Length: 139
Image 1 (cartoon, helix red, strand yellow):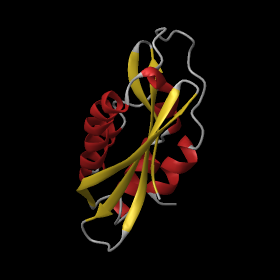
Image 2 (spheres, rainbow, N blue to C red):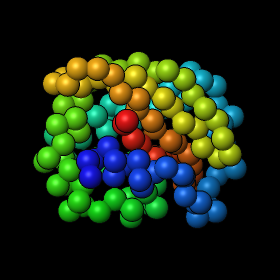
Image 3 (cartoon, rainbow, N blue to C red):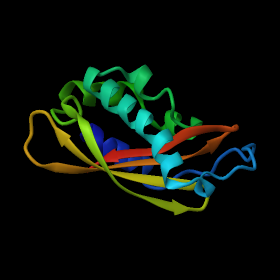
């Protein structure tokens, strides 16, 4: 199973949160605000995936997402997935989908070693009054 598969498996549906969130709902933010929040988070995921830095990779995950990510398995995927270790730092935002208490930001993503394009997905929402990553995948 590749890192991208692991991320898809663990993030297909945002998990319920603790119920202690702020009354602010991320879906109420304008697209520009969401992109301004999402872009640095996506860049961090790309950087830490390329460098195989598990601790840094999961630092902005929701608590449920972080628990679902097994360090040994993810570390193995960092070491063995050509795509996960060679993501281009150039990407294009394709759009934003709002649902419930989460937004999904979609990206056109490329690899520095493999030809073609991939669809990147970043699911964001609030947990304990902070914006956290509730899902991330590339497929």
